[in-house]
Length: 124
Image 1: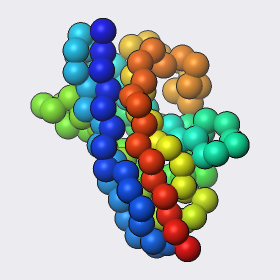
Image 2 (image 1 turned 120 degrees about the horizontal axis):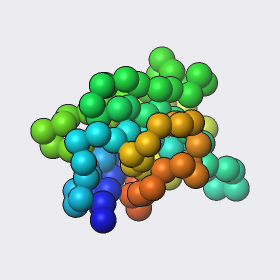
Image 3 (image 1 turned 90 degrees about the vertical axis):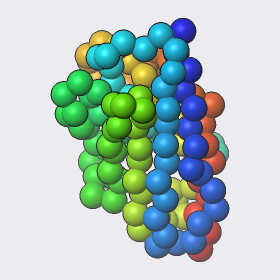
């Protein structure tokens, strides 16, 4: 079993930056992909970014690339999401997820483990 714990959410102002963290524990292997997703009230879950723990290859949603950056710290089994120039429409619950196999990294249904999520609220 794998546990994912997100942290770093909060209430910020428009234009602020925030860094989210996700730490993986349990029966993880050395090769997996961690992704970040978000879901706003009344909207579908949206892919943000993913990173391959082994190769460091990264994958981004085109609409968020440039403002959001994903990175990882293998020693801590952690992945981070740096979010800059935040806007009110970025308000959502942000969740990290883990998968072991390749495929469509933007497809939430292909991830095997999920964290509980952390709330990000951007006020205008």
